[in-house]
Length: 129
Length: 348
Image (cartoon, rainbow over all chains, first blue to last red; front, side, top):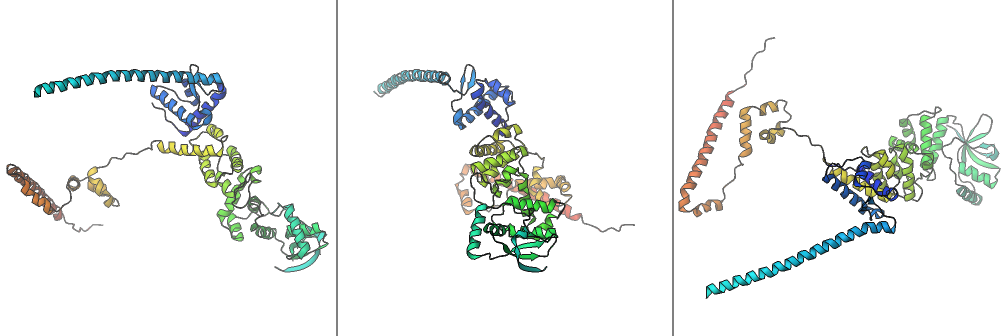
């Protein structure tokens, strides 16, 4: 069953997120347990992540909330910030590389189509003669 | 009630420690003293005679204090013969109630004393009529006493919002908030000078049944501006949650006309009779008569020869259908009009 989000539940989540500054990293399941919900599907996990992002966007103190291999953290020290930014950056670079690859494939398709069109034009010219 | 104005020895006058007003601004008393020094005392104070031959102040406390400050030996006073404690207290209250410096808490405490003190024990209704105020006015003042002493000290008269003070309008929306949050919230409102509209919104959060006290404890730590954002979020989520809908099974053929007869006790029974059902079924489905316009009539000429016969056949079947309906419903009409009401004699 999907999570029924109420104001009360959102406030509990908000408090857990603020507490992360003191308590340190927590995995999604731990956060869910703390606010009294169970994550029974991927949809539930996504829903919780979405609410976390919404709350984090609302408060400046939580803006840097992010995921590390130890769980979700609100960074305080330099290395903690890098721990969040590094995978984000490499993910971004990976996406750029993939986009470049697709672009190069697109360029090849473009050439092929141009050749096909020229051939078609030549055929028509032959017929008309 | 008789009244005498005498010049009495100021040393023979005792202050009434039980009188409604107890907050006196030292500065304003010295201002009054210098005014008396300049132009003299324009209005006499009012006192009543005690059994020991001394006088007790009824009203004019500030004037008395100012004269004492000036070191005057005598003071002009109206001697009241009224001995009823209730009348004197009410007189003191009426004298002070209109004054700006008389705080809402002093007023509330005076009302509370008149209603609950065994010496008076008068009803709110009687108090309202004696003071010429509404019962609501009195109960609103009494609500101020629900707050703790530190909050009561912050409550001031007037409507201007100033730091670390509370107007009655600011504090009253919080009167029903749970006791553990009420005072803390009032202090926060005073500190952050929250407007009345915002206080009303915040009180919604703290009065809500669907917010746990654990969450309220968390909310109380937030500043007013954040609480206002939370109120918006609360309203949004409340509107988002699906409302319980109660489904009712209704006969769609009769629902259109049901409201016309809803007052009739046997209407449902009537609409369940098969022929009645059929009638309304038809009435709901057949469109009301529309005049065929000239354009539509002229468009007949556009029908090509090969489709003409089809068109004539379709019109024929429509006419047959309508005539068939008309014939049948004429019979039904005749049948129903033959069921006449007859009077029968009832044997006792």
